[in-house]
Image 1 (cartoon, rainbow, N blue to C red):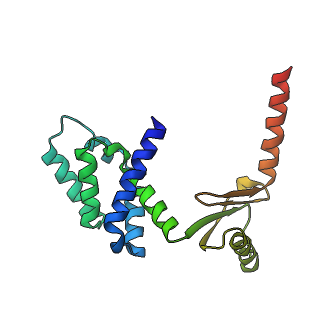
Image 2 (cartoon, one colour):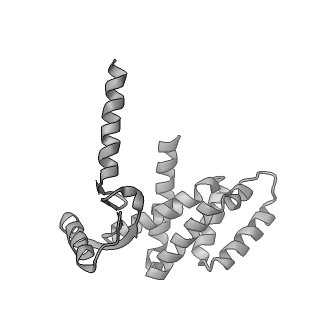
Length: 185
């Protein structure tokens, strides 16, 4: 079912992109990303829209008010109403995320989150950015985050890529080897 849902999600996203591509601006993408985040954190929104006994008029009111509060364009409301009509509102968040992902791929834009165990200097940040640019020669953006659980290391994550070097990863790898050896006994 997950594979089928992934294909369906991608079809809705591709159709949305094809119809609305000329409207895409950085602000438009940010709006879609923001709305996807809202839906992910407010599960009650989707759950309410998924109630079969709730009249469509009420669902329409909820959607319109929410989209108005979220400053979303009419194209998003059309997508939400289409998913409601098709009884697929449960995949709304995934469709929105897929739209952003596919748009960035069309534009050859990649975003990477660089997580380190300590703060990096500007020179170190530039070295990490240069490393990523050597691996992926497209337009990239980077975001730097500190996570002390890495235990002296660095993790670079994008939608399609992940690099990690840390003591925590090494310890996890050793733990997995020990567990596999114990299974053999």
